[in-house]
Length: 205
Image (tube, rainbow, N blue to C red; front, side):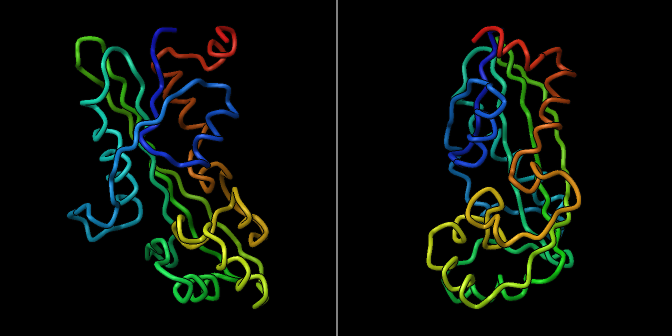
């Protein structure tokens, strides 16, 4: 299998998920600041993650030579259709968690996969998936402690289900990996459509 896989991000959680699958990959920082990207659709969560994930994947195209698979991914936490971006400070993080606690919210992840060919041409697959998340009723102690660490400030909605924020979550309805930031079943679906079997990565290793 000659194709290399490139993750257009430096996101630790997504790297861990690819490592879980046993797929060798490299990271290229796409250097995309989500809030600076303009989307002409009033920022619906579905179109937001679809557009941002495509922007991330395309941002590294000129850094890739030969056959490669490029992954661009974006995840947002939403409440009643409104995107909750990363909190800027402790006050915002505390307010966000107080708002989400004891209730349902929805997480969307957009996944764009670019199949870059040796001649410079490419094909693009695009997916969006959503999962409902139910958060515990949280004590003031856990909110204060959690917002004193770095994790809330690097994630939409002010928490990470794959980190210490897992303790905040009661249950989910949908795909855990969508909430974690990389829907593995959709990645596998796209790879299989392009005649790439993940099992072959295991055999080669």
